[in-house]
Image (cartoon, rainbow, N blue to C red; front, top):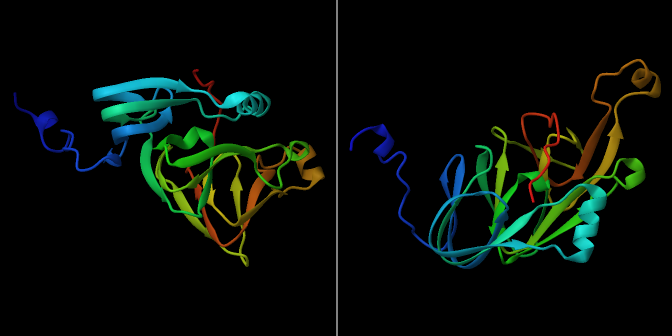
Length: 225
């Protein structure tokens, strides 16, 4: 059989080594030799001897998820084989987290990660429940984290002298050592008159990077469990 579909552009590449790799712009491949974690429903194909099991978050994690609405429904993938992962044809990226690093990311942007990484849901500092209540996933340890983003992300340097303000619905994540707080850019009078629609942003200050997607979240889609 002939045609562009069967050209080298689309045929999957042979596995080079265990772990996570970019198959193409919209899909990651994970060569499993033991265990890894992925968001539920992200598997689009697999081969080999693999088992897929829903991963619980424990009583405390489930309670926090119910209260905050933030959460990442996970599955454990165990065995030996290859699995291809994607989410709504979003762009895929791999982040290498080194010992001592942490990365804060919105749960909706997580695709998969190594079992060597730790994961928990935390309140974003400076945004308590009385101030709006933002909750994100924090990853640490040593390993790779697979991310998805609608479109090409913007990676913006942050410095102590020049903080960055981002829309809370557009932020993907940020590196450690950045201070966060909510910033109101409109006066009360302006808000009462209708405002600009950009009344509150997340302010980040310090030394690091913030990752932003090139669109705002227009609506929250219910996650499947």
